[in-house]
Amino acid sequence: MDNQKFLHKKLLPLTLLALFISQVSIAQKVVHYDLYVRDTVVNYAGKEKRAIAVNGQIPMPTLEFTEGDTAEIVVHNQLKESTSLHWHGLFLPNKEDGVPFLTQMPIEPGTTYTYRFPIIQTGTHWYHSHSGLQEQIGMYGSFIMHKRADDKTFRKGIDDLPEIPIMLSEWTNLNPNNVHRMLHNASDWFAIRKGATQSYAEAIQSGKFKTKLTNEWKRMLAMDVSDVYYERVLMNGNHHTDLKSIDGKPLKAGDKVRLRISNGGASSSFGFATQAVKCP
Ligand SMILES: [Cu+2]
Image 1 (cartoon, rainbow, N blue to C red):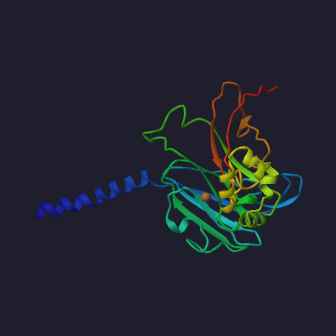
Image 2 (image 1 turned 135 degrees about the vertical axis):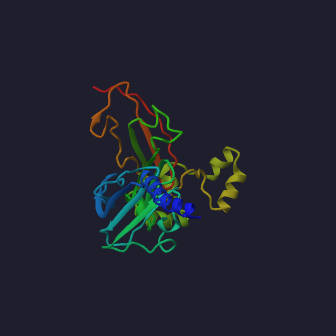
């Protein structure tokens, strides 16, 4: 009995120490970002338009983490309207999901809100506003989660390559709220802009009279791939993207890079191709 008591006394601090050590080795790194959300004016397609820039940029800053980190993202809403951020495709506690009136209250103008959640996956994701149609005017960005170096699936030569995040998106000079309204009215406007209309004569000529009738009945347009015509498609918030350097370091022939591509478009599918261009 006495012996056991003695052992217990001796072992307890040891166990505590062991627990402490294991606690330290898996201690989570908190990765902190401050996001300042502000109105801006852009000219993507010949007209000055209102947009939203975060930390002064469109798309929003790329947020990078490693699996096991804790993300701490502080949103400073400097708009005249409420906002929110949704983390596309992330596994996280429901209250951090960023859906106003469902998982949180909207972030009101002039206020600050903190999202805090553990990173428990890896891969290329993106994040965007879940308030109104703010996503359409700039509030989208890359969300990259790296593998831990001790991950069993870590591929040397692939997972450690220099990376370039690429956000694809669309731009319309129309107010996104009007786009929304026009879609509800089954307007032909976008189809006309895209040259994707079909007359009854054309339908009959191609033997699609019946389909045409059914589609009209369903108020479905002839070529219903993407419902909206966009003035521009953007890559990292621009007409073209400079892939010539990473973090200011110029790339040279033979260098390998990894592109992390997200489609932040509201209704477009993108085909993506690379082309070697000889640089001077
Ligand atoms: Cu989403």
